[in-house]
View 1: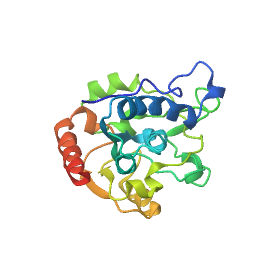
View 2: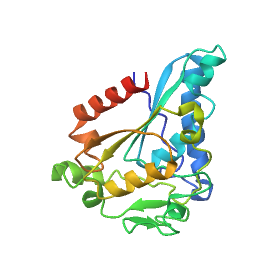
View 3: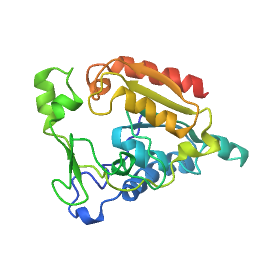
Length: 222
């Protein structure tokens, strides 16, 4: 069963002044708590791109290892990042890069506190069918790249041995070197797998391979 939280508040908000990573975390946490606390489900928290920021904070206190010790059913069995940001507490994506966003992220556009991708086909989908990439480029939404990261769950002992990362080696937006560097900076042990494709390919034309690697990492968690 795959469950996606509703659209994050930072996606095309009516009032961008209220946009923050914290607001996005709340949206994910509501869904996660419903699955874990109300239904007693075991959940893999799967994060992609900017989702690595709010998604990493949402499982705090919901790890299966913690809940099992408390005699509770369900919990987050692990955290899996696919070409996603790993940002330390208190930093934003901008802060992580010395205060400057990469050139493909347009700052304060279309309004203050928000960011949107410039040239999304080249940076995100260079190996995708051109017609499909062109159609999807119109669906690119705003994100809160300048908002600070609250406590990420990957920093906690409860998730040791339960951290996975799928690296997209041909990623023009978040290069291979950057993905590996973010993992190294956490000083945590990671289960790492690779896909030799672009940023968006795992969800468009390499779905079977992505599912296979995801299942492999889940097996490692279990």
